[in-house]
Image 1: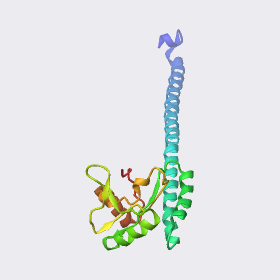
Image 2: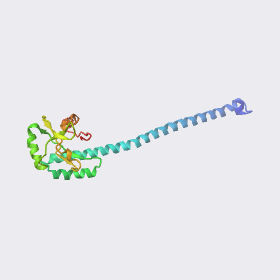
Image 3: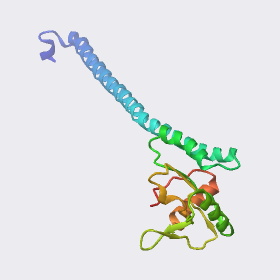
Image 4: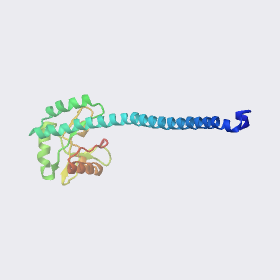
Length: 195
């Protein structure tokens, strides 16, 4: 202590040393408190900044799903949706939502309705229309008999997606499972492209 106080007696030096150590203790305490506060502020700021893209992506997904769900509303509001109506309705969706590559309408056709469905489709699309599925050697072939078919009835844009018309999504167990979930939950189920 004689170094700190010089020639001053110890008793008189003690208050000065205590003030020094108390000041040092307050400074260190203030530094630690400021550092903790700054870490909390930075962590909070990071969470906020990190959540913005996630929230924006979630909002974008919900907007896209809303657009697709509106196609179902079109069918709910109409007894029969014609190809031109589907085209006009979906065209706006595809223009507004560039992340959606195509929109298809896929009815459920029971086995006993297949002939009637294909006859109607031959009038609407082409005389050689039939419900088809991917062939083992490549290409498409007439769909094998099954209890129900899920053929693509309309697809937009049509250009570049012609091969999808009449394609039975039930031919793929992966798509059949997705269709089952969609029907069971009455919700949209997203999948990767079929072909």
